[in-house]
Image (cartoon, rainbow, N blue to C red; front, side, top):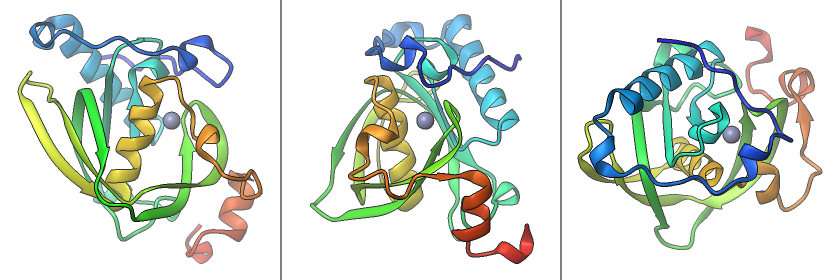
Length: 184
Ligand SMILES: [Zn+2]
């Protein structure tokens, strides 16, 4: 396993449209190692999602998940998400309801901003074992899945913001916008 270098905003790989992974290659040692390395990299940098282009692999894959023990005031204490590798995802919104909440990105360090997204989505994809999967997500997982799938199309969360008024550095976010300042 290895911790991979994370591409930061400005690197062209973050603006490219990533290529699908042929399902027959998901079991290959290259893709299996990439999945392991992406989980390790996401954990190392305390992320809750990480997409292929963020580690300089222009492939349609992301990993996501958060352990209950790792929940922080910045993420919130009422949300958890199973660990999953998602390959060649296709996402459709369920209904017309939207949610607005904070987002951050390992490729845009130390900045948070509020983004409006569909509140519920259906995801059709392949899992790490090369099996077709379909799942529905709401709340934090729905937001993460949409944020990560955007990465596969060269879209960053800034692009989804209706206004930049909420853009906040992490220090100021912790000081003014978290619910649990006393636990910092
Ligand atoms: Zn991101």
